[in-house]
Amino acid sequence: MLTSKSTVRKLLIALLLVIAFALLGIWQRHLLLISPWSIGEPPALLVAQTEISAGSYWHDDYFLIEPIDSQTIAIGEPRYAQQNYSYLLLGDEAAILFDAGPGIRDIRSVAQSLTDLPITFVPSHFHYDHIGNEVTFETVAVIDLPYLRERAAEDSLSLTWQEHLGNGEGFALPTLEVDEWLLPNSVLDLGGRELQVLHTPGHTEDSISLLDLSSGAVFTGDFVYPGNLYAFLPTSNMADYLVGANNLLRVVEEDALLFGAHRGPDPVIPRLNTQDLKDLREALSLIRNRQLQGSGSYPVSYPVNEQISILAEPRWLQSWRSEYANQP
Ligand SMILES: [Zn+2]
Image (cartoon, rainbow, N blue to C red):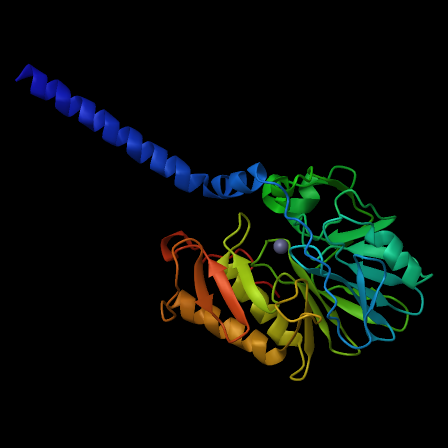
């Protein structure tokens, strides 16, 4: 009798330990996700790609320059595994560099070779493959969100690992010296060209898009591009994603072009249109209402259209509460 009681007690303790470890694992799932990335080697550069679109040219053996119009230049990194695209946006008096890639090479000097205008670096969000890491800029402008402002003593903003995620590829956490804080919906005047800052959370809480008020083009960072959209990362939030889609759809024209930050399988600038954005909003609404079936276990892949999928956490881990739901 005594033996059986103590066996039951041992089994109970073992069960409690298993449950505790499982809960700890779920709670720290993003850290567990990032850890294996940190063990491996950083991804090798892709082999040199010779296939480029008409009008594009190589800056060197790494950066691809793809002019969109006389004042908009896409700077691609097609040899980097994530195939990033950053955008140099020129006005008459000033320029914006929207994203800076991972900083494997110096994009600042590339941008400076394309214009004599003063350049302000504006990250679409703080992930390591957009922030430039060791590449620094004279002027930096970032989204003005209360929690970021609170953290930035004397405008020095140290990123958290959840915001940056760069340890997987060996990038140290950077500190941004912020020169300008961009309120959501504020307008950047480049002289003869105005860009509106749109808060488009979802992929990350701090994600922004820029709307060109004259051409109607939208630069969307990682919020939307052709391919798999990452909505399962530490600061991703599904309800935020829907808010971001609505924020964009409120202001974009029917015939707008959207330029994303990662290229798909085709060797061209990652370009989408307003219908893709509508498809994204529709898919998010369907996921929220449990009307769209995903595939896979972690992350779960939900189809948006032929070009786009959303990679999300399993339903029971998805967050459908957004503190930005009632934004103006
Ligand atoms: Zn990202």
